[in-house]
Image (spheres, rainbow, N blue to C red):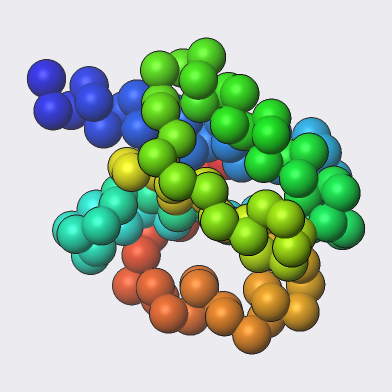
Length: 118
């Protein structure tokens, strides 16, 4: 049963990455944090082109989460549109503007994580 649950989480993380790609985000990465982080299993990281575009991506990923049975437990940065964080507990989505993406460099911070093929 646990393996099935993990597959569902991974599937949602990949779906979120695909939504970001379809909406013209760049540098999209899915990190598998199982065994590395106690807080979540997957990070989806993407760079947006504008605050408006980033909000659209966040809205579409939130809707996809609802459609897939993933409740969003938190959202931060939506109004500022520089770093939008969507917390689905097992999957956390980060949509950055390019400046904040470089500054926070989550891929370096979580350098031990495996990248999931999207």
